[in-house]
Amino acid sequence: MIRIAAVGDVHVDKDVLGRFRPALEELPEHADALLVAGDLTRHGTVEEARCFAREFGGLAVPVVAVLGNHDHQSDQQSRIIDLLTTSGITVLEGEATVLELHGHRLGVAGVKGFGGGFAGACASNFGEREMKDFVETTEVVARRLEDALKSVQVDALVALTHYSPVPDTLLGEPLEIYPFLGCYQLGRAIDSVPAALALHGHAHHGSERGRTPGGVPVRNVAHPVIKQAYNVYQLLSEEADLQLVAT
Image: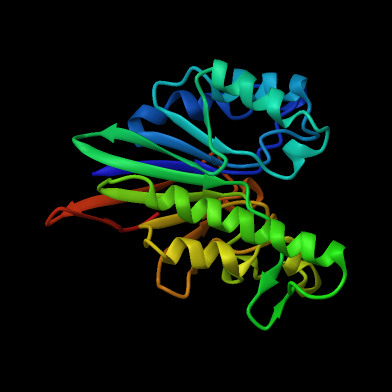
């Protein structure tokens, strides 16, 4: 059995220090790894990233994260990644990492993601150069996720993004902002493998559960949605296959 703890949108700053740490110290009793689905900081400063590293670093389980849109606000994302990496936190952007857990190989492929919308109400690569640039960014990010998912040979594969790959987990958000909360291309990338589980954040007023068109379970783990330090998802071994069972 592999137990994955996950949370997103923790927006750590000085005033948040100590809020998550007591529960994180107990992680080894409940989970084998922690995945963080972006918006690690409030305004994307190195100082805030240092606070995140103090709160989420040095744990007794591996920590893997992607950045979110807030982490890009101050244009210091490269420095943030370097700082977190030095602190022992793996940050993914179009890459995959493999964790050896209880004799199983767990693969985590991650990107921040981007907006664009979903089937029937999405941006198209047509018209002004600015619109084409927007959609091309979405397509490039989705291809990077697909390539990362396909780059590893593992027993179970998890897709970790900040933006949502499906509209299901956005229920509760205003329909008008769906295109800024996720895109169908991420879901298409996840279905190309497929993954065993997809985790994202970003939608603070969304819903927890959804599925890709191909049937991959999707969970919105934004802290305002799950309302606790982390959720735990179990992947169980049955006839050499790992399956999501419950949260």
